[in-house]
Image (cartoon, rainbow, N blue to C red; front, top):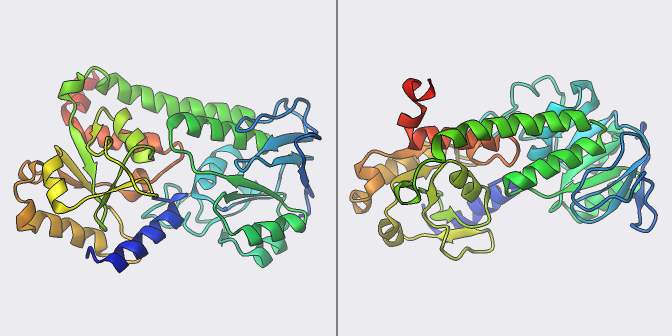
Length: 344
């Protein structure tokens, strides 16, 4: 299962999803140069447009300034992050389409809520042009030629990078809210997320550093996410220590781990995939393989029966749903802190 070709195939699939582990008639906005913004005040990169009126200027995550002449009414989302956020900010009738993955209950937090949105899309230029959107949110790693075709056709295309930290999530919610004219709803969404985080922090913040449990997420191809990943952020907010946070990462910010290194790290808790791309039985098979591997019987997490399959929609989220992932991990690691008596 750890053969090189399988590792590369699965890693490539996850990277394509993560960015999301991973988106004409109403508005014909065109890109503007930074020297000629039409907002009330010059927009700053990574910050929402100023004021509450249109037209306004926003700067996407590629550094391009976009002029939005009126409140977008026909919106397409082609990233899972923007799917999550826009569903909280705008009426569903304004959301023309979401990503093809939004309806997959294995990896999406909004599958049931988008069931009645007909257009589950990929970056198909012909289909998108036919839908005549006012604005399209796409991942910053999307096919540059297809993005150019949309822009050349007069479509406002907002390139969006996947956030890694809670602070970046807050900022991107504000930026998207500004772009679609829903600043107050953006503030409300950030407030709800912060309240969820506050409730977890109230339970785990008092754990002394030397008593915090170590946790390691172990992927099916034999790697673990290290520094600069949402997993690292998730573990820190859950009151845990990422067992590989001090180790060097590869180009995907993953730490390759042999079984020998895994035994050396010997984490208190081992987190395994809740879902494997293209293999419905893959997560369960891998879970059983780890538990039954004679070489891993001495692993602390195995001996103490603290090996868990974390739901992929929580583990891989880069939106406000990361707070739900933090809560799941904290409750799993420190159940006594979340018992009924503790909450009273």
